[in-house]
Amino acid sequence: MSGSRAHRLAARRAERRRTARRGAMVAAASVVVAIGTASGMLSALDDRQDSDTARPEVTTSPYLAPLPAVPTPSSASPGASPSTSPSPKKKASPTTSPTKTETAEKRQAPAASTRLYRHPESQVLEWVRANDGDPRHAVIASRIADQPAAVWFADFTPSTITSRVRAVTAGGSTQGRVPVVVPYAIPGRDCGGASQGGAPDLDAYDDWIDAFAAGLGSGEVIVILEPDSVAQADCLSTGERGRRFASLARAGRVLKAANPRARVYYDAGHSGWHAAAKQAGWLRQAGAASAASSDGVFSNVSNFHRTDDEIAYDRQVLDALGGPAGLGAVIDTSRNGNGAPADGEWCDPSGRKLGRTPTLSTGEARIDGYLWVKLPGESDGCKGAPGTFTPSYAYELAR
Image (cartoon, rainbow, N blue to C red; front, top):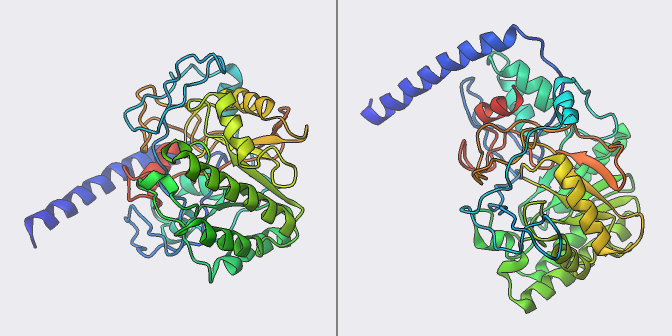
């Protein structure tokens, strides 16, 4: 046996011993049902009990670009950040102390949503099924795997996209629940960064969206249309940006025409990124103010900003956007329980926790839902391979 392999095995045994000790302490406490599940049509290819990753077979919730924060006061939108290009060196908005409401919510044991759909094929569910004896099993199963989350379609596969989308939407219809789907194949995705990919050009993307829409069925469904596609458009030239926005506006019209019960939300970035007025201007160009293509905006996907900050920001964006009075917002609350790290770390930062339980009943004006879009436990690329379910990270978020 090589020295490096022996070292890896020894490290793995040590990790198992540490994990077992932690698991013993966790087992003594009652496990509450809280937040999350994973998405995508995935399978775990490595079913060893001590495995710390489950590799996706088809689609994962991808590692997204580092999203900037450190807002400097802007005259366009008080308290919002200036327009900047994403950079991992930018710091996040200062983390504030939890409000009494947020603290109380963490102490509660919210049940899984009875309205949102939990797709039965996901990385976290594969791990839970294959690792019943793992000391982290109870916490991950109850706090993450039992919760509904988005299903991402991040690979450009025109020949199969309709059937794969239909498998998710049909499952939701059968149960009378609302699935959340994420088309993520815009050309120039992630500005050439770690999540680069997608369709080869906008013509191919338009065809892919047509095929995606054909799988939406006739039941209720929420579409999170292309995370980062608007907020990260700074990397495009003016002409490229205009063409992308025109394609996104078309996408919204196609999706809603295919299924009038589909609710389509557009990318608003997050509260630590662009000023609300600038973001709203881009969103208007992308079709987000038109009832024919949009039901509103989404924010905080794959990020950590507190729900209260996102509510305030999304309302600013919607006010600046204009459009029908019924436009609303949905917020990714999958990992924002402790807010954004003060040092700006975006890649699997330590000390983060699960956020509010996914629900379509927020009790907040113009806020249509709290969703788990980024899947808790799927790595950004630091605690595990990008996009793969990493039990140690999931356990850290959930305990």
